[in-house]
Length: 133
Image (cartoon, rainbow, N blue to C red):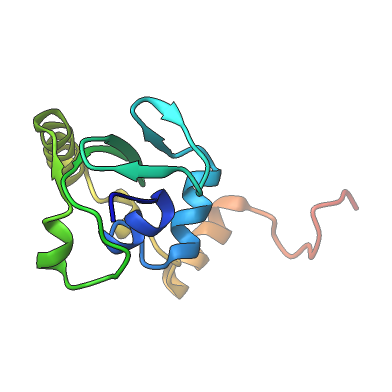
């Protein structure tokens, strides 16, 4: 086996959980082979460069092996080699994400006490609607 569909390879290399997710990502234009947009049926071969976006990070890998069966993570890692630039960008994003304040995690649903203080600030009084009386 020298060639395989890109959606099958992405699934076998464990970049996506299901083959349908891999197909959707290729259809959305988030996967490129040798800097060309492709369709899910495009065949990939050893030596091709695949750029794929996972969340906010773009990963660039070189195809080292072909498999149409999904194995464990150690077998999947033998199918590709991530480029140095891709590793650096991924590490930079991880570091930046780690250093950002966790503001989204601190603010959640207001407590009863918080709601009462918000109501005092709003000063709507006893009116049940925002329309003028």
